[in-house]
Image (cartoon, rainbow, N blue to C red; front, side):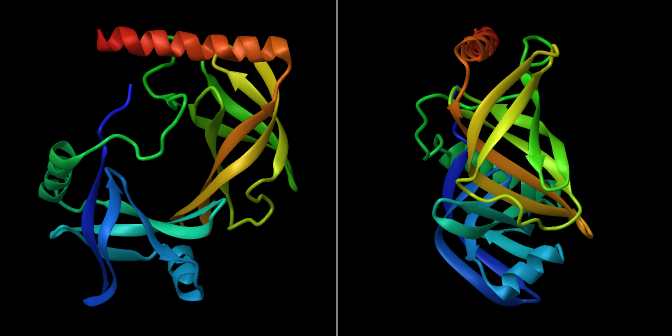
Length: 233
């Protein structure tokens, strides 16, 4: 189920014709350039202002916007790629096709994207978890044997969650089944999509689940993998 969708390229980040950053070998995917900037007041302000930069990926010009990511190794900023022309996107996809490789993060179990699976099979679609403002619902983006990733909408950059924080969550499946688990936040990412409005994403690792609920969740994984295999047949 793995696909070649990353490649390594020289990347330049330009702001008003001024070269801000030159990366000889940056990791690039269809949507992102990874680990472009470290945390600083200037970059944080550009992120909050939803500032757009010119990005040159091996000479192919496009636009990019900052995404803030926090993990076990600290905080850094990726660039979300924004294609302004069909030619730019075509060249970028061609680079992935010719130079691409599988994910550099080796996983014992693959992440299963929700897109394309429902309504064919039952999948977790929502996470309910506690925040300072009360229980909040988030949309599941992908899931795996060990954990899942989900997103919520925020009014502002929030410091109420942090990496390694433990949470008691509820997962709601596409058929209304409710599963509970204790989990740990291993990744947080934020992207400003409008003035004062953010998408916050969480990567969770499961720590504990009751045996009967673990068996039910494992069944979801198995059914999803079978469905994907049918699509490849």
